[in-house]
Every structure is written in C-alpha cells, then in structure tokens.
Image 1 (tube, one colour):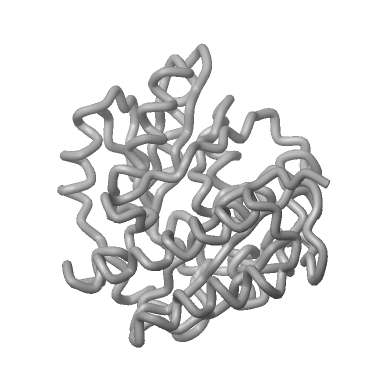
Image 2 (cartoon, rainbow, N blue to C red; image 1 turned 180 degrees about the vertical axis):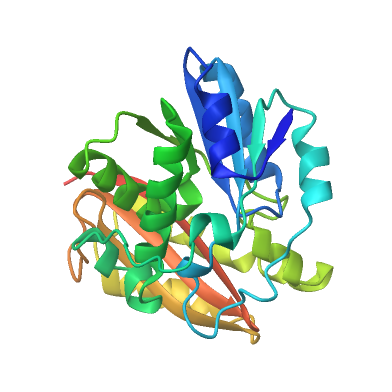
Length: 281
C-alpha cells in the first residue's frame, strides 16, 4: 500500500499503471460501509485506489467541518486488510490552490432533497469528485447507496461531461439495529446510537405499507413522522418520496419506481437513509 499526498507524485505513479482501476473516494473516518466499497473494487478491478480528503467545499455554513472526525493512522490500519495499491491523501493546498475559482454545477437533480437542505453541497461534491476523477483516471468508481441522490448527481456529471468511467453503486451497510453506517455516527453515544435505530424502523414501516398496497404519500408520511417523534431528541429535516429516475417529488398517488428518503437531526448530528421500491399500479 503506497501513500501519496501530492498530485504530481500520484500522476507519476499513475503513468505506469495498466488494467482496470477501481477508485473509492472518502473523507476518512472509515467504517464498514467504506470498506465494503474497497472490497467491491478488489473483486472487480485490477488495482484499487482510495482517497482520503475532508472536502471543505461540500460543507454548508454551520456544519461540522472543523469537528469532522479525522484519524489517518486508524484509516490506514483498516485499509491494510485489503488490497489497496495507493492511498491518496492530499491537503487543501493541493486540491484548492490559491486563486482556485472553478466549480462544477449540476442544474437539475442537485436542487432537490439534500440540495434544498444543504445549499452549495453538491457543487462542492461534484467539484472535488470531478477533480479526483481527472487525477486518478479510474475505470470504475464506487459509492454507497446511502447517498442515493449523490449517486444520481455523479452519474449525470459523468454522462454530461464525458468521463470515461463507470459509477458502481453499492448497498447500504448497517449497524445491528439497522442504522445506516456513517462517519457521523461516531458523534452519537452508544445509547443514542441505539435510539437512532428508529430511523431505519420508520423506513421499514413505510416499505411495509407500500408492500400492503398503500399509494398515499400523506398516509405514509404521517406514520413515519409519528414514529420519528417517539424519540424526543430527533428532529425531522425531511421525509420524501420521489420518482427514482427524475427525483421529482410525488405529492399524492405513488406509482412506479420510487426513492423513499429521510434526513433527521439527532441532537446536532445529521443522519440520512433511504430505500427504493417498485410500486405496482
């Protein structure tokens, strides 16, 4: 496992590479969800590259940039159990040098769901991932489905800007109580992490209602919100049912391929989760 922190050093190493290259971009604080992406890359590609970089451009004002968990030594120890050819860990001066003023914008999907709650977020995500794609030049890039909207936005960027790579969505990895794994889970005490399992339970209840044939967004939303409110420390940001292709909000009758997603604050910790469902007419 080679450690590289400069763009020029990485590009020198990259010139000698051949075969398929899997790329797993991360912000560190690695957990089993990240490691499942590395495992997938190992199984699919000849080489695997992991980046670790806490990207300031994707944090909106008031978010946890300064407190975001960072432990490079622990991350490298976790990655050592896999076949990782390079860990690329640049700093801000490498990624946003003085005078940097070019950003990537997506003008459709990025305005919905997370885009409403976190203005400028996807501009930061697309810019850093676009830069990393240009530096790494992977054949495949692996992303977790917990960030379902992010995958859609990145797929659109890859198509629109003609990146020669494949985005590979990978299943959500969960804790024992169903809580979707996230680097931000570390902020929660063990007791609060257990309480946060209500997020997944509420989505499972929504899925159960869909299986039973409920087509009303209003009815499903009422049940989910009631379940979330049973934990007094949790505040709902949004619960949404959208068309899974267009990401357009469904307000009344549910039909077709849908994405059901939720975002909450557990005290000051923001957590998201989702599932997809094919609704019969």
